[in-house]
Structures are given as C-alpha cells and as structure tokens.
Length: 91
Image 1 (cartoon, helix red, strand yellow):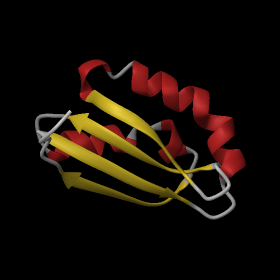
Image 2 (spheres, helix red, strand yellow):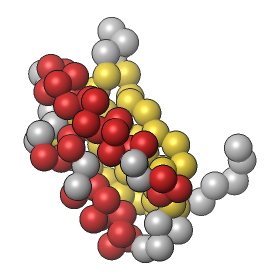
Image 3 (spheres, one colour):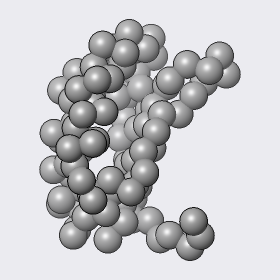
C-alpha cells in the first residue's frame, strides 16, 4: 500500500528542521524499501518548509507508526501531517 505523508512545518521552524535533518535523513535511509521517494517542500525563498514522503507499507497503521518515529516528529517540527492513500500511475 502506498501512502503519501504530506507535512507542513510550523512557521519559523527552519532552524529546527536544519538541526534535525541529519537524524531525519538517517531515518529515511534506514527505512529500506519503506521509502519510495522523499524530499522537502520549498517556499518562495527556496527554504525548506515541509515534507513529502511516499511510503510503501502494509497498511495505514504501519504508516502512522513510521511517522510517529520520525526524528522530525520528536523535534515537534510539523504544524500538521496528513497520511493519504496514494496510487502510483506514472514514474
């Protein structure tokens, strides 16, 4: 099951993101085949302001567990996080 994790950073949280980025990227890389693709959203100035991660998981509960263990979650970076079932058509 593919799940899109769509997260928006809290306003003014760029330094929190930067301080926790290495741990977050290590978590992504350590997740093996769970991560299909991942990357930050950018604001008009080109600064990171959110995340899009496509998870390949058994079910929504697994996606929720993955999201709960993300170092960005522990750092309280996000204003909101959505988990949505997603269907790959191209790419």
